[in-house]
Length: 353
Image 1 (cartoon, helix red, strand yellow):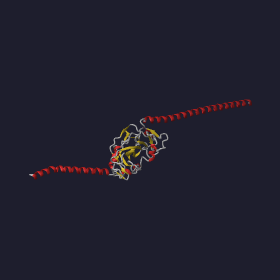
Image 2 (cartoon, rainbow, N blue to C red):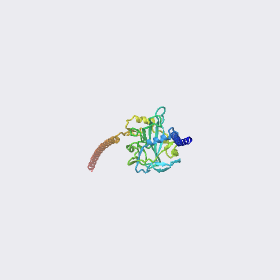
Image 3 (tube, one colour):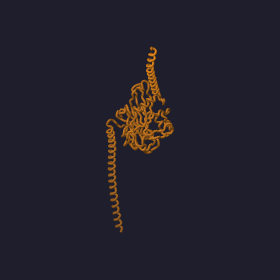
Image 4 (tube, rainbow, N blue to C red):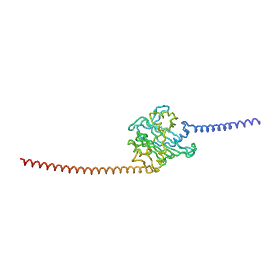
């Protein structure tokens, strides 16, 4: 009887013990898998894949594209192919996340994030196949432990006609754009696909840019490109010579001189990334009264041009009047002299007869 009771007790306890052990094993495996997932660094840049994806999603910009762009939307490109081959125009955004240069020691981590909207074609003036455009953000961790830290944006950059004579790329503080803990708004010009941190700036490009009748892009997916030497997601098309994607991925959009120049300006300013190319519009204010500030600047410029025009017109008018008067007087004097000479000749001939 005692032995039978012992068997019953063991029979009752065994399932509970087995279940508890199984639960512990599952929890251990989940923890190990989670830890392994956090540790995976496919592009060998020191940042885990999980952290990169987290940052890409947190700071994804709101891209405002033309409702009737001739290229529709940014394209998805076929993975695994060395030649960039557009699959469909579905609003895919490609990302790159890498540690900012020059940061280390006890300082909180700084990370640079590039968001590429890649288009099948540039269909604006002087159009061409394959259009490589992007916007970027520099973010900083609030703690040294990157996996547990929250992140805040410091600066934003928008590429517009990079590396051309029409380069009007811009840089701004994240606070200026009200985009510290999330993505900024980025206006994309119709056909040319240049990026702007403000709608008004779009009109100040090379003359062909327009950011009118725009709608927010519905992003189909964010694909991590990895790095040029360690592509992720099958993005071997990075290094193709048919577009300058690799060149853009290998440089920082926040060099020290550009950041220092921006920091010397008022907190409400957006600055051109390249100084000296825009003598009449070096800096444009975009505070809470963005429209007023820009409109005022436009009015001042227009007023100056109008005044110069009026002065020129007046000067030309005065010159014209003076010239006309001078010519008139000269004409009258000449005709008077000719008339007098003619009369003198007539008298001389009469006397001879």
